[in-house]
Image 1 (cartoon, rainbow, N blue to C red):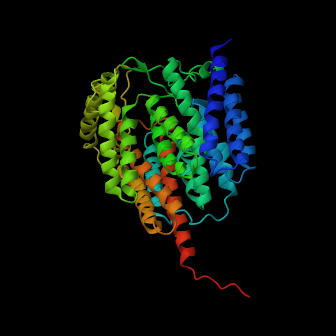
Image 2 (spheres, rainbow, N blue to C red):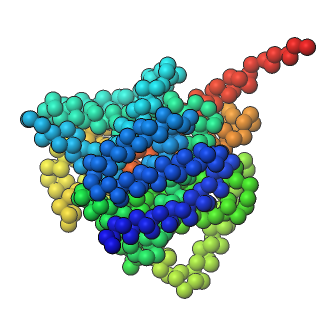
Image 3 (tube, rainbow, N blue to C red):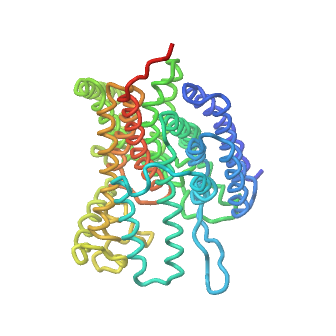
Length: 503
């Protein structure tokens, strides 16, 4: 039996277990019919990936399938979130014709944008507010225009058109659809629940990978007959770094941090304490499995901010500190205490050279950017200073998204990039403060969103802008925008005088 068939069978078994808990966790938000719709969609797309035996056939079948499914649901973005992590984003170039070598690079995530979000885009009727009326819209548009303008330098018109298509599908479309299509509290809750449907099986699969030292999705390259640079085996201190369906352990850990942020709200809708704790346990184990220290720190940042934003914030932080000290003391008493400490960021010595590389990258990049500070230099890799940063794989690993933005588009690009985050956070924070005593569910959703996006801003200072990572942070930015608009509507309705009921 081929390895990918064995992996497929194991994934089906593990996902069945995970979906049982996901259904219990989301029962307060999704009906049984809605949950099964999302679960079955996940299973079908996963089956396409392992059983079509051809990458292009897989993309075509999946695209047609999601296009049909999205027309039959009232919650298209819940479907999008549920499918977002189902399959690794293996990349290939669509073959060209004539003078064109290829049309564009596509992967599973691009297919979701084209097959699902594009249909939602055409079905949107007079979305409010119109694009450009929100500060975050302006910063996003300026950032994209700066990058499109810089792409014009030293490249062909064909390549420019190709890059514009990629930017539209991977950046503008997810942001625009999520920020405009999520229009009420039920939509917000459905998006959160849909993400749980995606992340519970990913976490359980990752835990299995770490325990068995077997990456289940690596063999999908053979199933689809398509080579991929990601998905390889990475070790840390003798343990396998699980990657689940994400292609890399860092992307896996990054996603689990956001899942934790969303679950902090979702758990408030769960009545059964066992399933509430089980959900926390699944996400926590999914966060541990990739052995990625950046996401661990991100999770600590997220929980700290979440507790601070709640009622009695300072008291909550004190309890967290005391609980952390007690947990650390208990871990040190265990036989594996020394190994655990060695894996922890800041105090452990495992892979300490990675921290040194990140510091050298920042220092070197600042020197290079100083030569062309306004708009950066797309050929920064040719700079003598940057050649010193070439690693054993003969690449410069830009493990800091802020540095990558700064090198490619200068301080102007970085200003607009940061502006997207900060304006979205500020809008969500103001909305959360205003709704605090009016609508408890919206207040709790605001806490989850703000703590998640601030944790993301912290984490992306130590990772590359690849795989699912940009999709997730644009999703969070868009949700913050949608949240602020929903709060405005709710407050407006609350302020309207109640009409007397005629007798």
